[in-house]
Amino acid sequence: MALIAYDSADAAAFAQTRHLRDDDLAVWRAAIGRYLEPRPGMRLLDLGCGTGSWARAFRTWWPDAEILAVEPSAAMRERAVVEPVLAGSAEDIPVADASLDGIWLSTVIHHVADLEAAAREIRRVLKPGAPVLIRSAFAGRHEAISLFRWFPEAVAVLDRYPSIAGVEAAFATAGFSTAGCEPVAQVTAPSLAVAAAGLRREAHTPLQLISDEAYAAGVARLAEAAHTPSGPVVDALDLLVLR
Image (tube, rainbow, N blue to C red; front, side, top):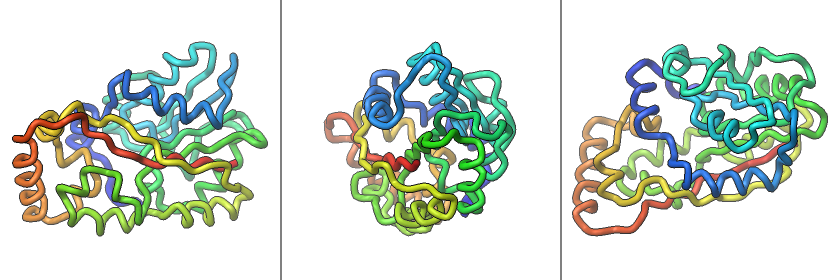
């Protein structure tokens, strides 16, 4: 898959626009808690951590746990809000066998070039029965994500992402089965006006992979809609959990 490789411009845009506010993270904390029981000494890996916002949240939520962070992009590591961030990827995780109590992948799975190789490597580093928690938009599931309302051409990009069934099948080759799958609704922006003002094309893979004309048309649609008072922008991403 590996749709894009993050450079410094992408990393800067991601850091500026893709970090959820602390209050808006609460729904994800609750969802994670349905599959992962935090405890002192727990070792949780944020795999493909980007600029580290999730690793930072985990360290705040669970100060007695050990939160590790791995990211393949040097540009992302340089802008990380946590330390250390190790160089590595889903196919090459720099930790020992059977040493992790869980792995978190947030909006990462579509960048993994070889899902079956990643599944084998994740199986290697996880303790028996430990969960893989995958937060993502998946192919065929765009309806609850507002971005695609303004940029309908980007749906075709999303459909190049792995599907839930495809991820399940790839991980089944390494002995994983599905423990749960649920949409989680989050507040992405307090209003459409804020969303429009803060939009950065470089921060969104689907927007990078549509034409300039389609992007400009979507910006115009969003700007027009933003003139009308609105409530919060709520999007639902899926949480797929495998064991």
